[in-house]
Image 1 (cartoon, rainbow, N blue to C red):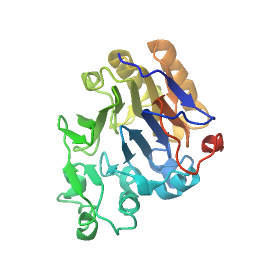
Image 2: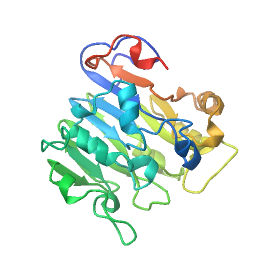
Image 3: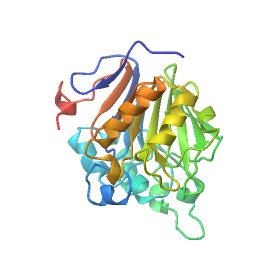
Image 4: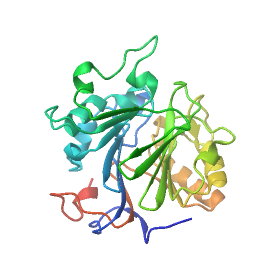
Length: 290
């Protein structure tokens, strides 16, 4: 597996200058009550890689959380939504307006499933004609489909979730692979889509002792990590039974059983691989102060 000089979970300190990848968690909350009560934030993730800045699954409060972390959403090059549930797409239009400079400039790309972009028999599309006209590109993705965003390759992966069209993603850029499971329970063969990932981000709603249809628990996450063997794994999208220190214990359990370092993400946490430029206007240490 190809590694890029350094893989570090940054809890404080300034970012290195140069080429690389940065993933910032604007919120690690998942499930109905954690999101509704904002017991954990639900702003999605910001992936910066190979000249692209991508907002993935901008849930409720994404703009507020980005402002708190001094992440400038006006610099986005793409907004991505894995499926049409509120905790993953609620603030997609707001992120698109940021990306298009307050809807004054035609730019950026929106990437999602057919059900999100076009709607289905039960739900309308989330994009209206006004915002469609402000985007330079709209890409409909389904499992197995690959697209290019600049120099970054993006492949959609299948999920086993209540939204039958839901997808995950694998990003390729800067000589590395970043996987994101999206929402869904573990299923045999899932690992083949994430083999060779330097970093695998998993949505893990519940601990190993508790299962919920259509969602991954820690036991499923362990099965995935053991089979896919990523360089490092990170859990997020926590429900009520994963907060108050439980997620950290589950991550430690997965690390011990799999031999793969597994971390429970926190609101505002960033991960870097290699060397990435510092965000304008952000001071050392400031990014991770709670």
